[in-house]
Image (tube, rainbow, N blue to C red):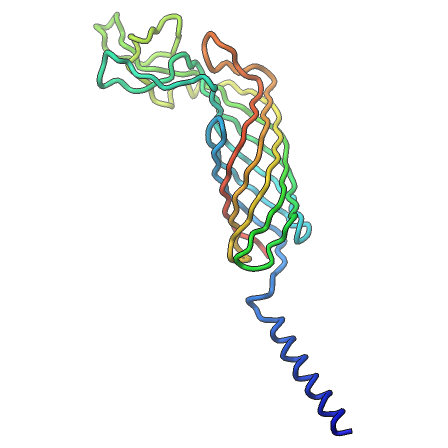
Length: 245
């Protein structure tokens, strides 16, 4: 009888010890209800930034709302300089408008490999879609004004009037802000997210994927060449943020 009691006592001690080991605060993964993330990304036609609010449906699934801003360029644009003036500034010859767009989206992220240890990596696929709002702004340049003894003046770029030799360089970005045209559209994205933060309460990840931006009309960026109504781009994004219990 004494041996049975001793064995039961020993099992109880071991069980308590094991339970305490399991409850080590460093090993407990808390369940987070939501998270916020900020991102910066490079894509094949420019750069962009993002904000994302995520609701955690489960430890594998997140549903999110996002806002992104990015610029989109024409694949043929190329910076040039006036070779007749050593002080000239660079500009894009033939570029008549710049184009920036805001994305307002909703999406889902699903983990296909959960991070089990602090130095691990969680792999998930992510997709989203929503509304696009483009901002088409005319280009202004600094040009040599023949009627004013070749003094430099700021004018809206007109390729039929402003030749390469008559252009000094780009003008300030604020020129033309009051002439912005809004171009609505839609977008869709798909990618893979690699989360690697060593802290459960923090979010740090890399995301790679493809995006499609479609607008209701062709956007005139370059003079006397084809212009796009839609863009297909590949992106690489770095995200960081916080999880909320």
